[in-house]
Length: 450
Image (cartoon, rainbow, N blue to C red; front, side):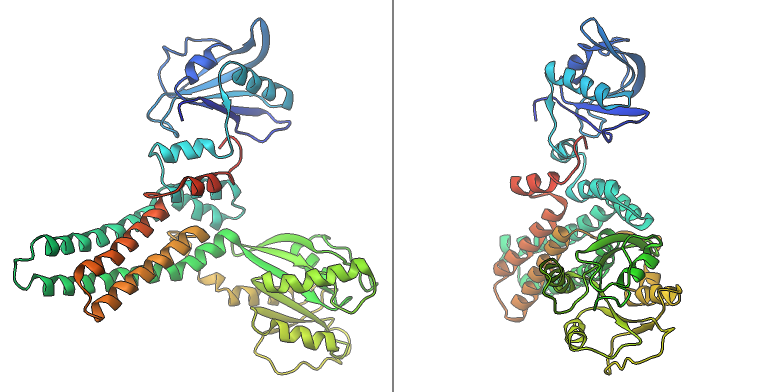
């Protein structure tokens, strides 16, 4: 944390502007070695200056330089951002000069990691930074912003404060046992407060499914026999010719992927190889992958031919999707009907991908299954990461253990242990407590320069 780091913060390639970011206590001194312009030690913080980058006597680029002095910066360290002309050669040359003159190349996510370690943001806000960078829909962007601005963190802080109040009441009971009846009063207070906190956590967990949906999207796999129209349906949904379509069975031998947004929720569409018995080695590998994708998917679109009778492979496929969130698509409804489906609770959509008939009904059914129209447009205070949701579930279990302890008339100091466990688990969500392994794993997923 004592060294000064540098990295390119914009995508490397041809563009109008590139930004090279520097952070650390020696930022001003190091940049001054390659800068010709105003004296950076004398300019006010949070100002932009015109000047030049030099390698000794060689002019490298004409730049704008932003200077932000600690502690009112993202990392709470001195930060300088060099806005150079875009281009790989120029950008790399400036970064090389910074590294030669005393900077260290930043690790992925290290600027955000320093912001966390220096108390500028908590872990939920840090996750929000990465989610904002990777967001692909307006809803996922809004969700990320609610994390970045501290709205979600405040929700966890409030729960921790309520638990801390309960623990304080218990501590009074333990420290001052001479007061009569105080244990009965404390137990009743504990039970009442824990019940309230438990309901709040259950409410947050119920909403967290929506948060995860917004952030991660819906992993959707299209399965069926060869030549039932899976690739055509994918192309219609994507509104582009993503998959090759022919009347030759087995054209699709590997997964074909694409993304669409429905009501601001991303669907990761996966078209799989047709499921059938085959001697073709490559195609058989594709069939195996198709069956594996069924187990991984959040939604299975199972396609059947309207003008063909149900085969043994399709009967087996129906059994596999019974316990999955699924939609049955009967394609080629413009042809004479020969298909007889067994009775099922799975919704059935009849369509013709060739004539683009039924696609809107399919979209509507997906919206209905995942309640996409009911997702609130203004409130995005959800937990969305698997890490934070898991910790919240563990804290709920700890509170349930408190209630069980009360029901069993356990000593108050035993009950306090579970309460403190719940308080600590909530602290892990926002980063009040953490391990180095957690930070390394989490920030390694960030892009370089952020």
